[in-house]
Image (cartoon, rainbow, N blue to C red; front, side):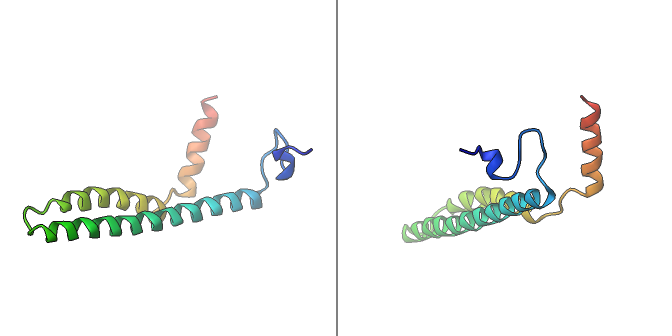
Length: 103
C-alpha cells in the first residue's frame, strides 16, 4: 500500500516539482474564487430578503443597511485578497531571505 506522499510522486524530505506546486496553487485559487461567488450569491439573496422584509413592514428605519454595509466590507476584502495586487516576486524573495536568516 502506498502512502499519500508516494501517490503524489513526492517522498518525505523532497520538495514538489514546480508543475505540482503550480497545480496546487491554481486549484487553491479556483476554490477561493468559487467560494467568493457563493458568498456573493448568498449576500445578494439574504440582503434581498432583508430589504423585502423591511419594505413589507412599512419602510421605517433602514436597518438592512447595517447588514449590507458590514457584510459588504467583508466581501470586499475577500475579493481584494483574490483579485487585488499581489505580492511582487521581489518582496517574496526578500521575505524568504529574511526567514532563512532567522533559523
